[in-house]
Image 1: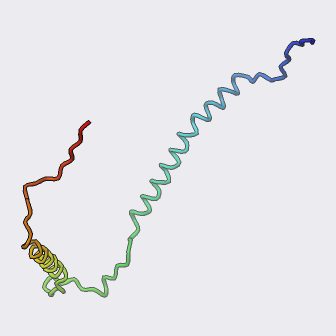
Image 2: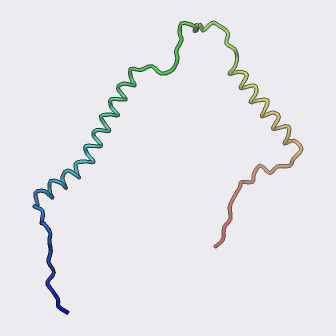
Image 3: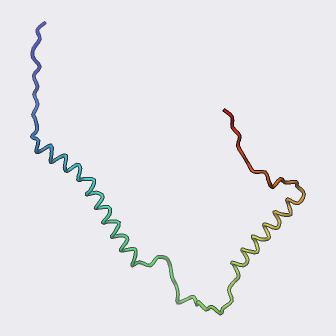
Length: 107
């Protein structure tokens, strides 16, 4: 069996090309970050001057002396009624209020 020397058929790149490609790869993240930041700033500036929602101030009157519909008061009354019913259910039971849930584990 005859052994021949190993021949390499390759091209050695110049160090300037390698340095340039490495520098461009490193700068890519910074360029993307700055592009995203500028887009975010533009959208924020656009949103500052836009009005969201359907505002019909012509149709509604905002009179502080006008009586309201009492919807907030009704919600409070419903909540109090629910708590009162809950307390009535507990009347027939003995409940230890001083006990706290705990977890015991032994190794």
